[in-house]
Each structure stands twice: as C-alpha cells, then as structure tokens.
Amino acid sequence: MTLALPGISRRRHLWGEVWREVVAVILGGLLMAAQIGGDARGYRDPGTWIVFDLAIGVAALVLLHWRRRWPVGVCIVLTALSALSVVASAASCIALISLATHRRWRPTLLCCAEALVAGYIFQLLFFTDAHNGFGEWITDTVIGVLAVALCVAIGWAIGARRLLVANLRTQLAVAEDRQHLRVEQARVAERARIAREMHDVLAHRISVIAMHSGALAYRKDLSQDELHESTAIIRDNAHAALTELREVLGVLRDPTAAVLRPDAPQPTLGDLPNLVATLESTDGPVDLTMPDDLSGLTELTSRNAYRIVQEGLTNRRKHAPGQAMSIVLSHDDDLRLTMRNGMPAVTVTSGSNELPDSGLGLVGATERAELVGGELTSGRDRAGDFVVRARLPWPRDDS
Image 1 (tube, rainbow, N blue to C red):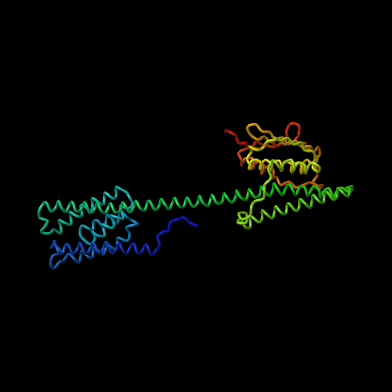
Image 2: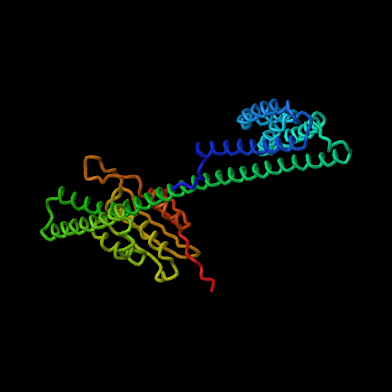
C-alpha cells in the first residue's frame, strides 16, 4: 500500500490552464467595457484603440502559457503591455499571482512597482473626464495598490499551500520508505529467529542420531540390549526432529495456523537435569551445578539459557566426544553460566564418524544471550579446555 499523494494529471493540468485563460478573458472584457462606458480617450466613438487593445490582449493571453517556465520574464512583459491594453492587464494579474507563488520577494516587488507605473501610464494615455481632479488620481492609486496587494496575497497563499503539499509528499514518502524498511527488518529478524530455533532443536537431535548410527556402523560387539537401546534412541529422536520440523514449516506456510493453535511448551532450565541425564550415558560424564530456586528468572531468559547449554552439549558431542564436561550456573546479580569440557588429544579425521560443523551454533548462542541483554564468550583456556561463559540478566526484586 502506497502512502504518496496523487500527482497532477494531464487533464487536471489542462483544466487549470483553461479556467485561468477564461478568467483573464472575462476580467479583460469587464475592464474594456468599463473603459468604453467611462468614455476614456481612445475608447470613445468610433473607438480606434479598441482593436489594438484586443490584439495586444490576445498576444498577452498567448504569452501567459509560458508563465511557469519563465515567471519573472513573462510577468515583466505582460505588466509592460498592461500600460497599453486593459485586456493585457487582466493577463498581467494572473502572471503576477503566478510569480508570487514562488515566494521570492525581489522579483515580486519589482513587478509590483512596474504594475503601479504601468497603471499611471495607462491613465495618462487614456484618461477620462472623471480623472481631471487630484482626488481622483489618489483614489486610482489606492485602488491600484490594493489590486496589486491582492494579487500578491493570493499568489503567496497558493505558494504556501503548494509548499505544504510538497512537504507532506516528502514526509509520506519517507514514512513509506521507513515502513518498508521496518517490514524488511522484521522479516530478516523472523528468518533469523526461525533459523536459530531450527538449528538449536534439530542440530541436537540429528547429532544424537548421527552418533548412535555411527556406533552401529563401526561397533560389531554390541549386545542385543545395547542394539535395541541405540535403535530406540535413533527412532525417538528422528520422530521428534520430524515433528518439530513439521511445526516450523507449517508456521512458514500458514502463519495463521500458529495463532489458532496453542504453542507447545518450550523447555527451560527446569528441564535441564532431564536433558543431561538422557545424554550422560552416551556422550560422556556431565557435572551439573545449578541454583535450587529459579523462580525469579524470566521464562525468556530461562529458555535461552537452556538452549545455550543444549548447544554446548551438542558441540561437545561433535568436537570432543566422550570428554568430561562441567556445567555451572550461579546467581549473583545476574545468571552466570560456565561450560567447560576437555578436548581430545587427536583430532578425528574426516573419513571417520565425524559430525558436520555448521559454524552457526555459537553464533546463535551469542545472539540468544544478546537478545536478553547479556553476553557470551567462548574459546580455549590455558589448560586447553574449551570454555563457554555467558552472563544473562536476572531481574532484581526491589519490593
């Protein structure tokens, strides 16, 4: 949906030119009739100057079409012609109004002074019997000044309105661009959120499937119970991964479905012991230490902390399978999370059961920490262990 104001159509432009010409013709005809009725010199019977006045007026009306391209020049020429023709004086009024719409004082004052001088010249050349006294000249001067001031005021008001409309057009265009930018940013943020959720959930389950399927392929000494346990783990995680993937794709195809259907409960730190227990027997020992009371922690922070720990466990499975891992969560002013695991002395070769590395796990974990106002760092320490440290805000109880 566009917010821009509609522009001027060609039909509207032509109509604007036509009605201005009609106004100039009507005003010129009235002034001509006033001169003839007032028995002005040159307009008396037989009225020899009437034909020349009309000819000059027609030329002025034609010249009026170029007032927008050359506003100052056209106004000066038409004002000069008004000293010889009352029909041209009507066209000069339209030109003066058009010049005043540009809201420039110097050319407008110049044309106003020229209009007053042209009026004096016309009165001297085509005087009537009523203009013999000094009082009549003063009256004509006041009327001329008021007429010129009225033209300037009309033009100035039209110019102010056009400037206001132009500013509104600019503001609406900027608002439309900002709206498009906000929509695009929202789309990018939603894509990043979906990608982060898919990576955190699916990468964990698929890595479990890959590890157990690799064990089935390379180990020939598994007992029947161990074989059944591994296949059950592979089956359960594959079903869970497909279910979660189907939910995400369903939201992408039909966003209204997510509104109509209630969201499934998301895991939080309260579910962390169960996650560690399910992986400890297959991935390696995990020493988990966490506060007993998590009631003051927000659900968003708790869920992001859970995902960060889940990503750490997935990375341990990929890069340091079987290595001991310690997970420590503590609470001072904020929630402090430290994950540490040893690294294998020999790197697994590419031809063995190595899990692919997407390179997005720690990036997503860092984004999760920053989204709630925290921070995350990762890397090897001096002992050679891989350490992930995160700080997540814990709301203070000021009551």
